[in-house]
Length: 104
Image (cartoon, rainbow, N blue to C red):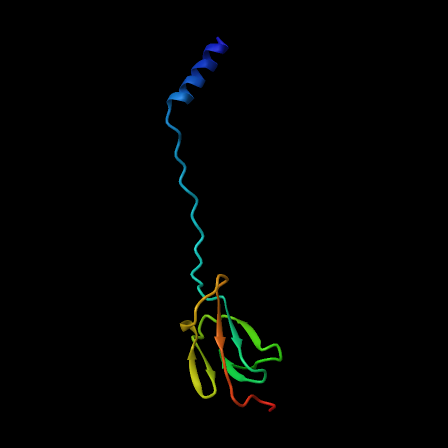
């Protein structure tokens, strides 16, 4: 009797269509730009998100992207940040050049 029930259970599993489970949701991040890497001559000053920064001796400074800042102020000009290409990590490199960096 048990073998007949076991055989019926196996037969039912083989003939019934599989139960479809919905695919898990894919995570979506709406953040496109993660950070901005400002490059230029050491001593070059710029403003980003209300703060003043100076390019260090290494020639670059990387800042986490602000949700509200879309531009930087450099040498009396506004630089639109999202015009520069994104790299594979979500960073944009912003080249700043200055003919008279501070300290020269």
